[in-house]
Length: 125
Image 1 (cartoon, helix red, strand yellow):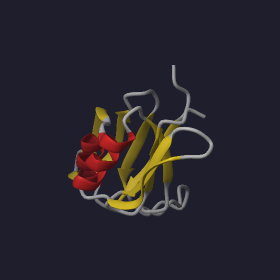
Image 2 (image 1 turned 180 degrees about the vertical axis):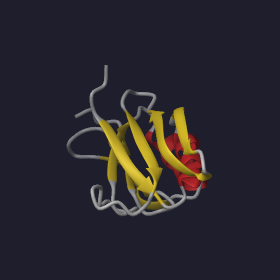
Image 3 (image 1 turned 45 degrees about the horizontal axis):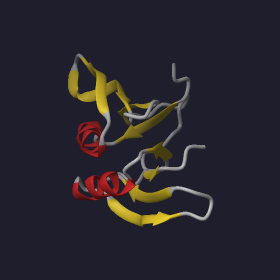
Image 4 (image 1 turned 30 degrees about the vertical axis):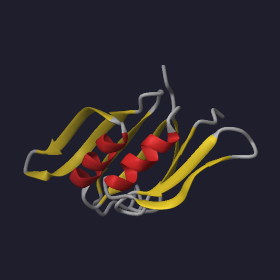
């Protein structure tokens, strides 16, 4: 069982879901506001190597003051180059192209369409 999950908020949660599926996440569940179907109250996605992501549509909430575009995530993958390319083709912005790292493994970083940073690497912490 994986006990660590990333949580993010997006201005356009549907566009985020599309981008995340393109880079390899699988959608487990999406709960929408019954009065406004464009609002994602809670979505849960799984990463193929374990762990996952929970997200929702950004709304004002003083108890959870996280603005979209300020998150950073590291996802382990055996095919950094393929995931990086899929992320860019799906609308992400290349921040760091795939490269071998001195500490081991290969990694790359992409900003998703709302500015959250996604690092994909073969290094397993």
